[in-house]
Image (cartoon, rainbow, N blue to C red; front, side, top):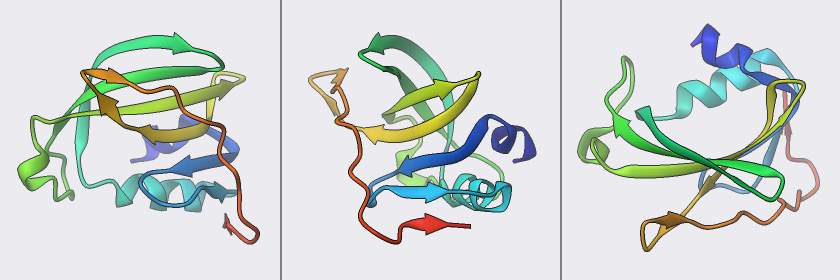
Length: 113
């Protein structure tokens, strides 16, 4: 989990079927990564506006609970700054193609530290 945590810049905005959250500490980033129930194997990437949209095949991971999700596809839109993830947004896959994300609108008090 430490390797995944190092991929993020601070602050980072994350959204995984939840309202957007701002992670301001490495501890918060680690907690976010640990909350993901599945591992993933990268299938493809493509550039969309200011995002890189990655499509993954979900896998089991140690400590996870992917269950029936193993083998399904999932997509995430990443925005990078200085080689680090500053936005991690789960995006739907429609007709086999991930949709372009809208920039997240942050409600007040969504900072997690």
